[in-house]
Image (cartoon, rainbow, N blue to C red):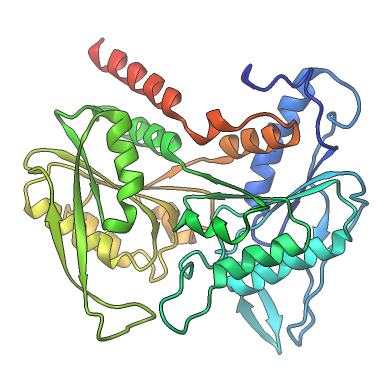
Length: 386
């Protein structure tokens, strides 16, 4: 662990405890492994010395669909972190004799059941929800529900003190709970590290690489990449048909590009999620038609709600070179066989975040990875120049 976390002198809020809701076990175990190693390396006896910080729990369901949560040990006085993956449709349950995949609504219900089963005994409850529940329904336009704001209010009323999330669709939703902690992190460094590891010849300079935002909503994250790396920035904006709604959204009529020429350049595109992937593939096609050399697509959450076939065809056409994403949410099994898919492991970063929270350390250096990105660029430049 880095010197920024002085475990030997820091006083934890309480003994660390981690609960993984159904679907988040894989990520929780990766995080737990790192935390156990770090805390044991300090050499302090007591609550910091454990073989695992994961508390055994379950969320069984009756065949009628009703559920409940069971926690197998006391949480009294513990600093509890609950990890929840609301996007994991790979978890199923028996409903009237049929195996039904869990929806985000059901994952959120299980999260609330876990909090209820804790019975207000933990010293503090922090929810680690990498993909924010209902984050795409974050604002009201007409007679609509405000699902994300309602979710945050429910968690606050149940005693949750902090929510840790990644790349929130619109972080301004935190205004719904001004008295609850809300930390919104980005996988910027880990994505760049994965990119340069799989494509060691890629130079992170403005002479060969540029950033393009897929739409106006993603401009912020692409501005960050471009600013930190000193790259040129372009943007597509989506012309939509607001007279019709298809699959819950207004269909895109066309993408219009604004920015510097992409001829001969490598292009990096960052977005928060890939759902159907239609807009990403259309964007990649247009970038290629404009003369881009290589196209790297990035998304924090790789949902692929319609499978990977269209991406396989687009890759064979040479429309893009890689899709870089994280292990912050469930990835469909087919992705493991896709040679274009590059995964950025976020478990170490999340372990740092949880350790900082447990030890009441500042997280400002974790929120902004500016220094780490510059160190990465220096290492890459040195390697390529040698």
